[in-house]
Image (cartoon, rainbow, N blue to C red; front, side, top):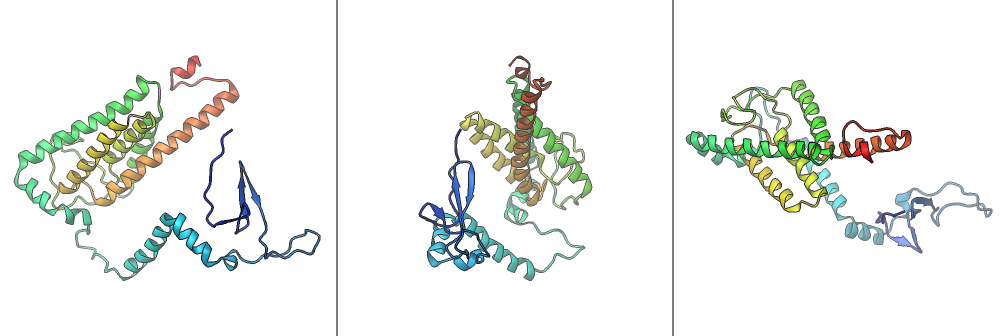
Length: 280
């Protein structure tokens, strides 16, 4: 049985955390602080609030070993100030999108060169076909359904959310008949299935140690995100949530597989999804 090493949120003292919690193998052993009141018979009373036991050394320890949460804590304070002082976009105005601002010149280039816009759209459609082929391949050919399950979760949720809140098409949108979905058909803006599908494929590649292929997909995903912003095919929030959705639904598919595997082992049943599970 393996154990996970957990870095405490506060420095240790004699093997225990100064906030009273120690990790020993798979169990969390609760220890009272030195300031905890006892009646001499080992019977505990009320203890001081945790923050009253903090010291400057604890603060330095947290800042040194847990700088990522500290960074985001500062971010919370910063964006609270931004949010509460920001001038709201008027109801009749176009939404403000920082990605549109950054790709303004690209939008002008593509608008003035329809052939280039069509070429990039065609290349992006090829990339979508690559994602789809890989995800389906992992199930049909390799007998690993996780990526396919996560894609089903992701696109179903995207359909529900996309229909629930139908965002307006940006004024400078540059469509193409060869862009996916092919044929200038309607599509949901929130969130980006292009980006989420690429994330699902990339995460599966990393699990299988196909690192170079995963890196290629990540680079192509960044390029397609820039193109989607330049053509106004998605808002920045659609792309950002697409990344998160790919990670989330890949994780949920993994939990689903784990749950079904446990149920299979308990019931000695069989799975209709993976051929391998029928013979193992």
